[in-house]
Length: 198
Figure (cartoon, rainbow, N blue to C red):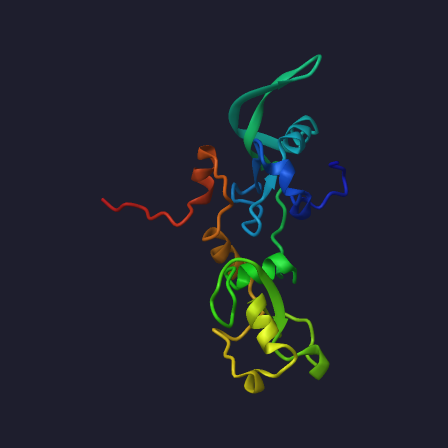
């Protein structure tokens, strides 16, 4: 439920099942997506609620209509916040963001798919859980490395782990769009498109 204390940066993080049908792309007041990682999407119910609370303006709509006893409204596909939300200056250290930083591939062998995470310096050897010491890893590499140091495991990192900047995460996030991209979102996303020069 949206209330006066809502943090719009986290409000759109919902169970994936609620985003399967008619999600709304949420733009900040500067008409940029509120987030690329994950893409700022609201379930259609939240988007309509925000419209009635006068928190957002509808920019684009789906063809489908929802009705109540007193109202009928086309489902919003793009909404823009009326109040500007200041971008975060730091990237939250979460499992999703870690996988995104590592571009959803094992940092030892490059495999994609089912990933877990690995402490480069094992916790049993004093390693801490931080951006600089945790990497995405596939299960076979994770089991192979176990609690050994990199040197003793005979394995190598594809690149050293580091704390990403919001700008770096936005750039990576643009390369990993969600499975569903509605045509009305394209003007606001520019997923890897090049502008044609005349």
